[in-house]
Length: 316
Ligand SMILES: Nc1nc2c([nH]c(=O)n2[C@H]2C[C@H](O)[C@@H](COP(=O)(O)OP(=O)(O)OP(=O)(O)O)O2)c(=O)[nH]1
Ligand SMILES: [Mg+2]
Image (cartoon, rainbow, N blue to C red; front, side, top):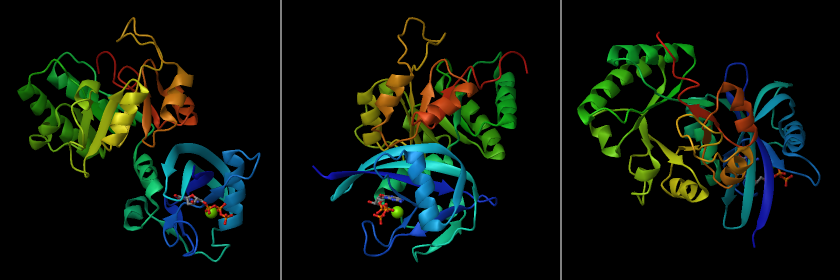
């Protein structure tokens, strides 16, 4: 049985929005690669305590405010690690390599130019995803629907799943192209809840697979440059989504919802237990709203997804 290491690591941002990375010495595990500063938990330390200590020891800063980002279980040939990754938004001190290692502040969009350990891949995804994910709802007509999308994008929606099971394919494509114009202007991502082949007709940012569609694929059905989201309701489906290389998943129903009466909710404990081994950003879905984002993140999720909580209700 390989040794299992619990490691706390931090994505530290400065006030220019840049992220702190450090280079691992050539001689250690994953040597020569860039990393987010951090290290192993000492006995009896919590992740947050280890984070504070390691950042002080390695890069000379004092953490003032941190929140959980993602937990990643990963198996290297030599050892298994649990990366307990935090986002640090406030700190004091000037970062430098206290152990002689190179450290750099880099723009988020430039992180992909650096080589990180294999386990870090989901961190780079989680960083680019917001903590709430809007699924589109109804409107009286197309014009009002686009108006609602516009209103949502003007508030703080950065990730949209276009879901409309009652439209014909032609109508869906037409509306998706109109939606794409709005999301592009707003700098938001648009995922289509449809067959992956729809990307030939709409150059959206990605696809959301229903659980039913998820079960039809043995490998990733869209290119790496597009985002793949999957709907999951049990641990087996989470594993299937992970095997397809999903970039994010929704997990539901965490609480009871009006849209699925009679379906037994999973509850928060089960949400946490199910997603813990899955190194993919997970949005909690089902009867949740903005007030639940902190809880979802505290339990290892990326945030909350929903229709009702985010899609403008009534006339706009
Ligand atoms: N700190 C950190 N470790 C990472 C990252 N990605 C990744 O796979 N790891 C792995 C590499 C190592 O196997 C383990 C971290 O262990 P470490 O050797 O840095 O721990 P440490 O700082 O406590 O080191 P030391 O006191 O033993 O010198 O986690 C990352 O982004 N940051
Ligand atoms: Mg370290």
